[in-house]
Image (cartoon, rainbow, N blue to C red; front, side, top):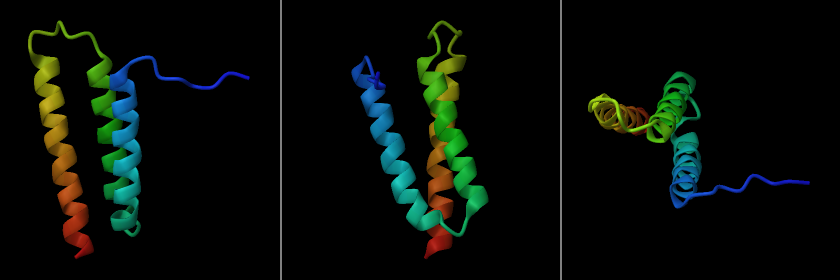
Length: 83
């Protein structure tokens, strides 16, 4: 039986971020399924961008930055609605 084993430290970091974000956001976003779904999609998109080859004329780096901004704004929206 084989188990999934990340091969790089960044994979462990991404897994930890995803688990922490999902766990924390689930408590705050339990009654916000669309915001939670959007947050999950943004986090998945960021993980894909991080894994992409870096030679994209700077567009990949800007996409990562803007995706992180969108994640932060979505998390703020979830927290705001939970207050």
